Length: 220
Ligand code: CA
Image 1 (cartoon, protein in one colour):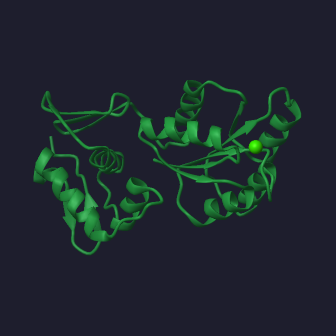
Image 2 (cartoon, rainbow, N blue to C red; image 1 turned 60 degrees about the vertical axis):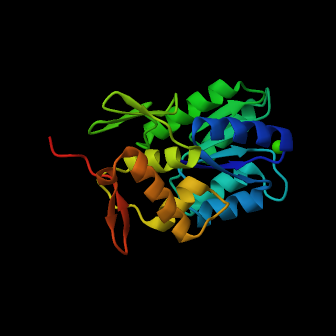
């Protein structure tokens, strides 16, 4: 899951990005409304967390512009304390949910997960593909009851493929969703897939040469 966080206050941006990263999301941060709108309309995100008070272009205008462009991306807005008008305006403009500052990080994570669930982008805590079990809350992987140690990148790759099982995922899509903004070369993805295959079994991840990778649900 790749999230765009649009927040101009460095401390909040750092804390939220940190918590999202620990939960396993890939996070990009935009520091003003212009950059936020631009990235949201040109790149592929699963959701946006958007502060309303932003330099250059305010958050409400970002929401309006995205909806005018017919973007259906889920948007969670962050509003100032006590500003009921901001909340109403935010929802009116097309935001899906709001959270009032200051907020507990746990609540933000829960709201985001609920939002992604509502739009069918599942953040189910447990993903099972054949004998493989991925616990996305505890960041643990088991195969037939045996725990597998994975690096954070290996874990993200595995989780993304498992979320998108039975669909060929292009290498460029993996780069976006697994690495975030620090983009590696394509051979880095190949090397990462190779390492993962050594740990979980080479048959688990299929290659479609020239197209990408696929994790297929084994026939019962
Ligand atoms: Ca702000």
